[in-house]
Amino acid sequence: MMNRRTWIKWVGWLGCCWLTTGQCAPPAAAQESKVLRDAFEAAESGFDPAQISDFYSATLVAHIFDGLFEYDYLARPYKI
Image 1 (spheres, rainbow, N blue to C red):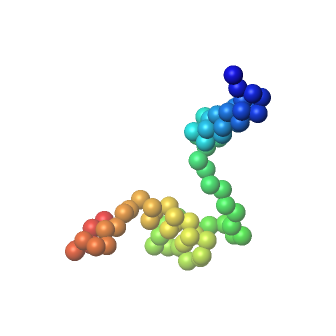
Image 2 (spheres, rainbow, N blue to C red; image 1 turned 180 degrees about the vertical axis):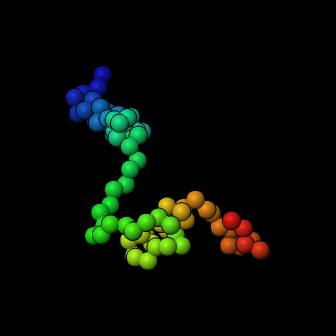
Image 3 (tube, rainbow, N blue to C red; image 1 turned 90 degrees about the vertical axis):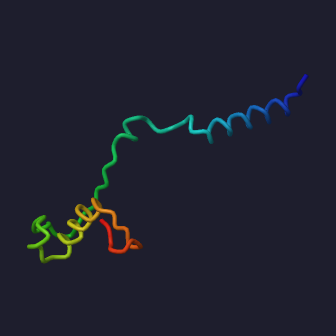
């Protein structure tokens, strides 16, 4: 028969195992929302890469359009 101290150790150990296996995940609503919000000091002037001339629009366009491509730099000729 286990004494009280051994029983508390086992319960604590099982609790740690349960917490580290991902059983206490955040609510489903928090997992579904994958939106990154960032504030710029000025508004963007447009989304046309050929016509933008300010820093904020260039940053926004680079994150929108460049992420759609993956470059293979080691291939000759280069592949997109």
